[in-house]
Image (cartoon, rainbow, N blue to C red; front, side):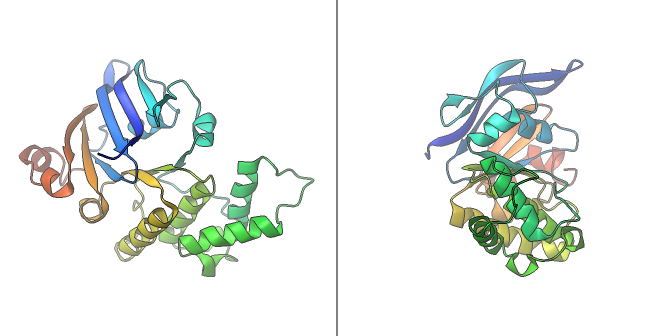
Length: 248
């Protein structure tokens, strides 16, 4: 078994009496690509919010490489090596692709201000390297809002990778992406994660994407882990077929 990079231990979260997480024990092994699936409204995004500090559990712990991060805020958790890409890309849409990257790099180092130049040789080189990693080098000078949705998603992921994370959390990476774009997007994403040696946990509604790209699948339902295992095993589980597949 690979060492755990992230663990939740007996996590409980409730909103107005509704249990969003009910005694959840989750383990993400180093180097995994773990998919989280479940019915709409089951709390999958809540899980990501718990792991990144946006939601504090009423009880239980979240540990990163064995260290308790439960009460830390999102910025502190990001500084410890956990990055996140959202369902809707968080970009400066009227800026060039390369500028989005350099802004992310400058913010990471805490070195950017209105009186300092954004573009430096070192920052431009690193931004270009990251764009090459996700296959967007040819789009570097384009205005971000002109990119097709799949490329906007990849840019958002590249921005997250500027933090040099050890763990990347993704909320529905193929949401809003055309059928023709989804597999090229995932191929580029997987290649970038492998090359950068980044572990990933992703929420996804497309079962074909999950089956093709996840090492392990976790089924989230009513605030609990209903099933987990290899994709073939999970998708042959009668409960998963009945309650999740086709309604996620």
